[in-house]
Image (cartoon, rainbow, N blue to C red; front, side, top):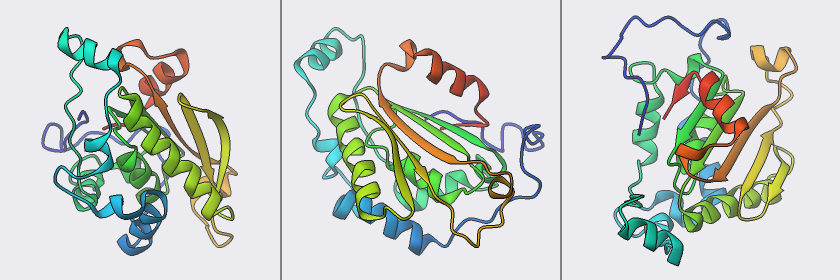
Length: 210
């Protein structure tokens, strides 16, 4: 995982386009409930039994790994660890408007960041392994199906990319809502060293890289 740690530069300035004031993290219980809606029991699993660990590599991916062109080794950060990493003492994600995750696995971290940090207007996640991507793709589609009053499907290329948006509550008075900005989460499958133009632009403009 990549990203700037507070210990590396504890006085780093906030991005020029950061919203005024930091938005507090939502309570963990509602966030965890949404993760469970999307991923089912897999949202709370740990060890080597998660869907991401059990996702089989394609024959082409096996050949790439055997040729040492790619490393498909997999691991997950648990929700409590993600919450800590996103906090002010580490990535300080609630001060930014955009986050990119490279090596997104099944997309759990990207979705949690999207939920935990209301200031993030765009979260972009890229995963190399197709089977792990498909787990995340199904989770985001499930979220839009089960909570349509909050999440909407914006774009979907099966097996390649899925993009959703969140409809903020009517009572939301955050800066981005007052400005009329939409919040979007995109998960795609691909090689981070061969990103498309849109993903490269998102990476170049990201306030946080995970």
